[in-house]
Length: 302
Image (cartoon, rainbow, N blue to C red; front, side, top):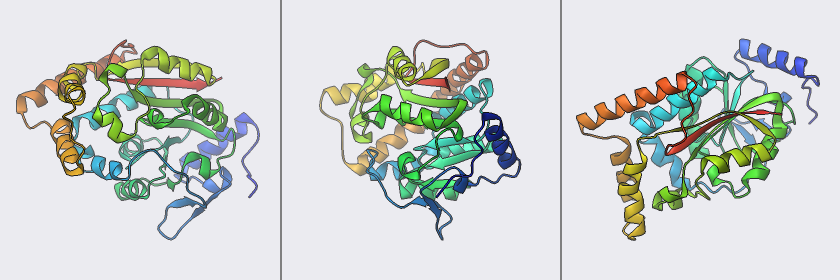
């Protein structure tokens, strides 16, 4: 299938402005290997293997709406987008159950979820995401220089050849297009949770900078967030992992996840709320933090 996407940067931008105004994203104009099926999802003809475990999306789906972690990550991502707005729809690559995509959509921005796992894609559809692609970004067949913005929210750590992957995504972006991403920080925080989730690595601040720069991005913003979590991660995750007492039974993993993401103690919830508020204020002031349990980066294609 031949793309009918305009060929000049100005015409491409106007194309997306027209699409967003109508809340209608015509994927047939920017992809070569997708079709819309009877379940109202966009599918590719072929499916590639993914490193994220099958049970991962369902486990996250059970806690996302009540999790302080998922809620605060969304808030930080949206602050980053306010500081450095996208020129059109954000294509949320590997977007899981659509929790981030729903936050972006509710904030008044257009978003397309690209999720290869059928469970995650259907959960996102259930959440009300208007445009959902059930495919890998490679299988979707995006036309080069067609996407205004890409989101990679805790995805890059799953990719074995991360720099090649980033370089490939760069080719899909329009000139000056944005990339927004979050990744887990520091190898010293590695635990069984990283193993179970299929992570390839955690990142230092410099390692993330190097990965983005080597792939041809300018770094607009790079900050740590969840600055208050490393001590808790060390005690609750890293120490049991080092002592070989981490459970790998699915039911116990799910139970532990709920305990860690939804604290029952009222005082702990109050403290977390205040710590999160301070982090959001720092982000609103465009202040970069050099430490955290996660990194948030915004880059531009150069």
